[in-house]
Image (cartoon, rainbow, N blue to C red; front, side, top):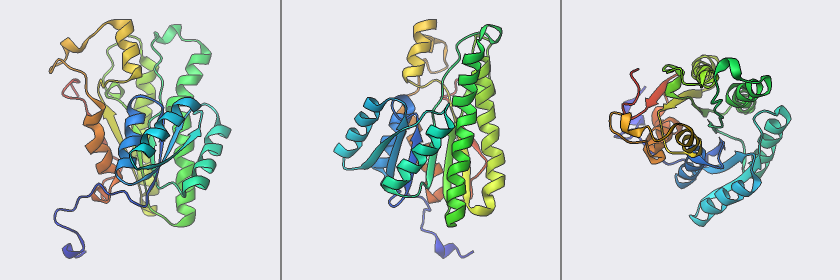
Length: 260
């Protein structure tokens, strides 16, 4: 490989020509991710359950000069996932970047969870993302096109304090492992699969935790919650050609909050 093939330095945030699907795009980190990818030139498919929120995200992106469409997608419903992929691809083209961001907390002790809640957490946090990843990869493989998949895990995948989110921790560990094994599976197809493990960042989910538990940021090393903007550079790195040789990796972004 000739070093002259690469610019100096070999990094760019230009995603012009890419089509990015972001799940959970109606709020929190997902909303930020959708806007960031659009600002970098990608055609964005914002996916979520709330139509009015999807319309808001699309309007925000378009008002800033970006291109976006909103598709309703329920990660607990396989038919909804597949229909959402079809609708998004029909509107803006083959999906080349996937950000598996949708997730819900359980916020209960393991032995107190109803079967319905167990199923919803597993389906939203792990089964749905797996189905979606495989569907998008299948289409890329059929068209012989490269792609990027970024799965959003959590530092709780490896650090659980016993305060009532056991299943969330289990599913987020599953997302990290999913990233590793699918990276191996699809390396030959030039589909890179990586994972981001955020710490405590401001979001609707975090607002709910603070409402239940009180403001715990003073106990953190830097006495603050992370701002979603602090994830922009990691997301764009994993989406861009600069990370061409990076696959099967989990990047922890937690502001020094967790011990490992």
